[in-house]
Length: 233
Image 1 (cartoon, rainbow, N blue to C red):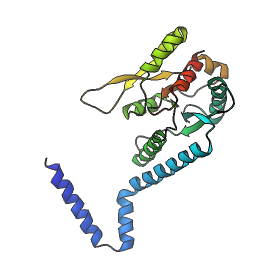
Image 2 (image 1 turned 90 degrees about the vertical axis):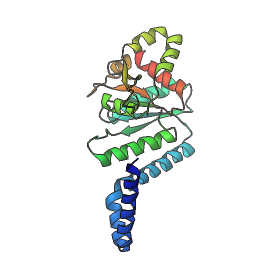
Image 3 (image 1 turned 45 degrees about the vertical axis):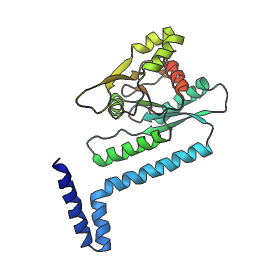
C-alpha cells in the first residue's frame, strides 16, 4: 500500500527534471534511462514486420525451427531441415524455415531484453514451431512459459507409435514451468535428442546436449509430432 505514493513521487520528480531541460538534453536524459526499453521496442517492431513479411511473401514455409548456435552450426541445421522437408511434407509445396537464436547472457540486462523481445515477437505471429536448444535455454524458456508442455503430444505418439514412444519417454526432461515462486510447478517440456538415431545417421558431433521443445504458439502440432518421431526412428 505504501509503494504507490512512492512511485507517484518518482514520476513527478522525473517530469519536473524534464521540464527544466532543453530539447537536446531531454532526448539525452530519456535515452540514458530508457534506452534498453527503446531498443527493445524497435527490435520487436522490426521482427514483427520482418516475420509478417515472410508470411505474406513466403506462403511455402510450413514449419519453423528455431535453434541455438551453441548447439548446432549452420551446416548441421541445414542438413536437419532438409530431412524435415522430406519427412514432414508429402510434396514439394512447403519447406522448413530455420532461424538461429543466440544464447541469452543472463548477466547482461540489455542482451536479455533484446532476446526476450525477439522470442515474444516470433511467438506472437506463430513463427516458431519447435526449439532445438541447450538445457539452460530450455529451462529459461520454460520458466517464462514460452513452451507447450509435451504431455498431449506424447499421448498421441503413444497411441499411434507405442515403440517410438517408449524410446522418447526415456529422454524426456522436466523443468520448472512459470514464475510462481510460492508454488513451483514442474512440467515435461523438453526431450534430449543428442544421441538419437537421426543425429547418429547425420553424423553430428554436438558440442553440448541438444533438447527438443515445442513453442507455446505453434500452428502445426501435427508437424511437430512428426519432427519428434523422426529423431527416434
